[in-house]
Length: 316
Image (tube, rainbow, N blue to C red; front, side, top):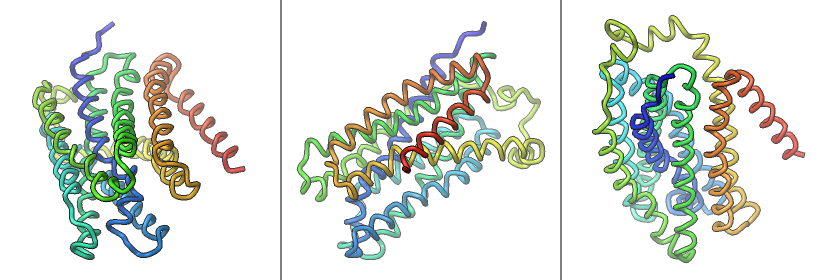
């Protein structure tokens, strides 16, 4: 049995975790951001607008996957993943110093939206690129376990964002969080970017052609993929919708709902959220290991059935 390239797995996973921290931290400070950038006089309307900007980042993720994925296919994963670092670190650090609506008016939410779009572009290319990077280096029969490092590290990044939010809410007073404390996690984005860039510089990889087992990479990889694999691509996209909706309902929106609607203390909500994601990080490689043994379909069907059952019971 071939051994797993631990160094490649660690490099792909750590960089992915750091980028998802940058992307997710916005969601945990949505109520504060709403007050500063969408002061409509109606807290609910402001919060909806804030999550609208959060959603805008998701609209850019497929584009990021296409653009940065194309670069990865043509020039190699290292070039693509290094580019995604800059596209995430720069907008995240800029959000930390972005003037609010009170200072520059309508320009504040417009600039915030543009920065979120850049973040979405980055994370769309980052996640797909890092998982592809891992799968290409996985030995036969262990692709599930190796690829799970991509998803587990993404959740770890979101967990890190949640933990940072909990720490800020614990150390600072509510007034301090609203005044300037919310900017601290975004300012850390620059440090995250530097660490991520260092990790990516030391990735070693084969030439793109050898990694794909081809004589030369196609000139337009997306056209080749759509022509030869459009059915598989559609199925994967549908499965991604289920996973994405489930994850962000539970681990991002629910935190805001509990705080603003149920009026649970923000610190308690983030503590519970962080603990729940820690459990998820542990379960991902376990499910991946099982998929290597019994197949992908039974594991995915079981996961979808459990989610459907839980959603039905919670809605009663």
